[in-house]
Image (tube, rainbow, N blue to C red):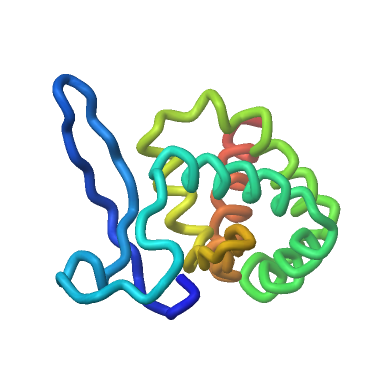
Length: 143
């Protein structure tokens, strides 16, 4: 949020249809909302976050940063291995159960800042390392 306040998931039902969205804390607490964005459709922002994550996980800057952090914890891991592991997540994503997708997003994303210009995703470096280690372990067991 431009004002720095958190948004919380909520929903409303109209007839048989369920509408899910995120609403600013100032609206929830009944105060006057001074921001231009008080509600965001959940599906819209969640889809945008997933789309951006998929792009970010392939970006050279993220690969290098993940490798630099991972080599402190995973002896002998190479930049190429990190790149390969993160690239293999892309085609696997759609096969994961929604609960696993949610777990991965929670591991990777520290917060999402929403403004009139769009959304900015702040990643957790430790989450990237954890994900790379998990994926590498799964691959080694499968080999």
